[in-house]
Amino acid sequence: MDPANEPVVDMLNQIADILEITGSDRFRPIAYRRAARTVEALPKPVSEYVSDGTVSQLSGVGEAIAAKITEFVKNGRLEYLENLRRGIPPGLLELLKLQDVGPKTVGKLFAELKITSIDELQKACIEHRIRGLKGFGEKTEEKILQSIAFYRSSSARYLLSDADAISEKLVSYLKPFSSKIEVAGSLRRRKETVGDIDIIVSAADPAKVMDAFTGFGETDVVLSKGETKSSVKLKSGMQVDLRVVDESSYGAALLYFTGSKDHNVILRTLSIDRGFKLNEYGLYRRKNDSVEAGRTEEEIYSALGMDFIPPELREARGEIDAATNHRLPVLVEPDDIRGDIHCHTDWSDGSNSLEDMVSAAERIGYSFIGISDHSRSVRVANGLSEERMVSQIERIERLNKSGRFRTRVLCGSEVDILPDGHLDYSDRLLSRMDYVIASIHSKFNMEEKEMTDRILTAFSNDYLTVFGHPTAREIGKREQIAFSKEKVFSAAAEKSVLLEINGSPERLDLNDSLIIEASKYGCSFIASTDSHHTSSLSNMRYAVSMARRGWLEKGKVANTLDLSHFLGAIGARR
Ligand code: DGT
Ligand code: CA
Ligand code: CA
Ligand code: ZN
Image: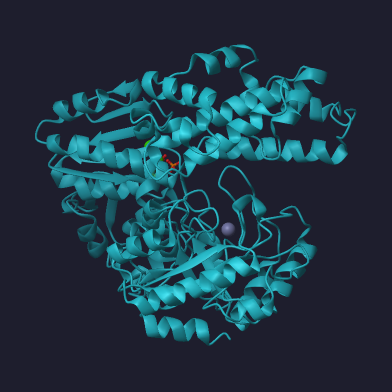
């Protein structure tokens, strides 16, 4: 989605949510959601359609909704929505953030039990008052309690991509005041979610940096302001800590505040064993307190007899031993990636045409791009019937023959793994594709044994190339599906099914710890973006971050191969 359209999409969906909660109308919520989907898929900011007066001609956007979009774009607010919001208790909208709790459920909980907040809902579950409602049972109470626990454990953290966006803005804003500046903390380690942002700066005039920092346009509250450390809370709710340090201590501070805490603890102990003392100011000889190192991280690691440890590995998972024995992996890098084979186009639920997608891939410099639209069962995503799939295959063959693009177009599909484990297309059709990504998009709640069988059945299809977003989790929204890691990962290794590292910011699936686990079974991986828009092709960096946190070298990531070897690698599976 064009980022400028996000507030408009949220606004339309929120109107639909409130209308559905109050149950005042059956059809208007559907209309608002349809309009939201249209705006989501627009190739440019909706404000441009407002300016040239074409907004009411967009599909699913009638005069009434067009007027609301126009008011919202012009004023940044919408009177109608504000009235709707005033008409319900504010806590009801937060209830919607719980997994498996939709507007109809919220409406019912409010109408029948007067529940207006997560706390009240929790209490009602514990007191078994939910099971008395029509259509609800003991199971529902358990599930709601789980959703509440999950929501509370994840809501205080932010997506890596959101933290990236704001920190990049902040760093370039502070750069003119700094001689050195870098992001530290979990964000520098590329952790999948970030609690707060940490920034380290050296500057000729520290007071000036601090003033600039606390005056940043997106600051909501200044939590503290000092000579060496300040903290602010941004309008998005995110907290940022800024530390100004002397250049002679810059490396030591960066090392300390990059963490992780567990990594630091081991480093400090090891420093003591070697006759040093390590803190955020430097590495000192214990016998006379003289400075051994501090300007750069490299210098400190090297004084301790270690190779430089990439931030993504600093999680106390054996990296310190590996660095001491000069056995750190040579991690895969963004530049190693030669292509992306998980991309959707407007043939299914993507926003851009096939040709636009290919030309965006060509601009990145990829040698190949794979088109993998949804299969027929995914109706909400406009999945391709077998006939449409055949015409897409033929279209791609013609496109390759035409020589219009230097980037080779591969034709695949993201095929649903149906509840019984069968794939959503006939083998005859699958045999005509360059590759097949098989993913789960339905019945996420199966018990572990049933889900494991479902996946293993899918793996028994020889056309399957990639297991897409293997755990199906969405960060903060949907938990991982349950399956036996041992059975699924060993089957993937045996049948040479590639495990996807999906770089879509809310998925990051597999994540670092599962990559490490799967590696123990000898699995190979493929990094991809699951792009629904040309602009999301750049999310490859998140897939690479997860791969790096998962200790992967380039040799374990299939799409670092050049085209002919890559074709060999996926063709070998036929
Ligand atoms: P987060 O913000 O929860 O995503 O995770 P971090 O790792 O960014 O943690 P944060 O912001 O609390 O602190 C940044 C780094 O500072 C942390 O990774 C290690 C270092 N640090 C903070 N407090 C301590 C501490 O008490 N002991 C040690 N050894 N290191 C600390
Ligand atoms: Ca942090
Ligand atoms: Ca912090
Ligand atoms: Zn998918």
